[in-house]
Amino acid sequence: MVSILVLNGPNLGRLGSREPDVYGSGTLEDLRVELDREAPPGHSIDLRQTNDEGELIGWLHEAVDTASPVILNPAAFTHYSYALRDAAALVTKAGLILVEVHITNPHTREEFRHNSVISGVATGVIAGFGFDSYLLALDAINRKLG
Picture 1: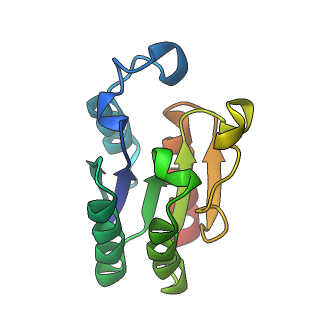
Picture 2 (picture 1 turned 90 degrees about the vertical axis):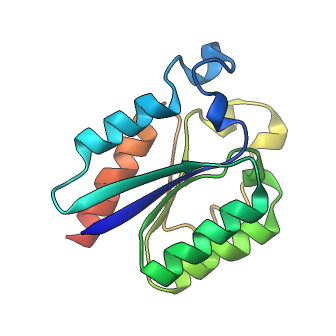
Picture 3 (picture 1 turned 180 degrees about the horizontal axis):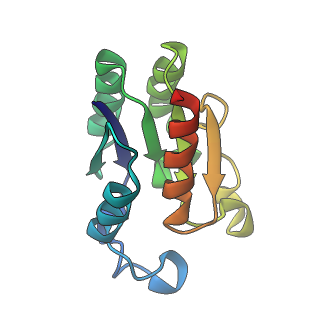
């Protein structure tokens, strides 16, 4: 069985109550249910969230060690965490898939959100489709894995 790591950065544990006009009313548990429902046969979803940069980096190291594809919503770390970028690069340099996702489209928001230090090392980027960004990433991983 292939385990797909779905990693979420800071403040995403507050989905459902944090700015629902921006992020929607769905919670991380709602997202887990959707991903589990859509996971292809032979694939499992391991959804995690942390507000800690070091923990997120450790999970990316784990992805390399277990040869797991990754769906990553780095949240605020997107814009400035070079340490997270380096860990993400380890994933793709190991020949694994890493899809950067965002619930909103950062390019339609504040200017400081327009730059991602992660995108340059990600396999692909999907943004602006709410929770469907994750489902599209799951589909892309499924297609890439054949």
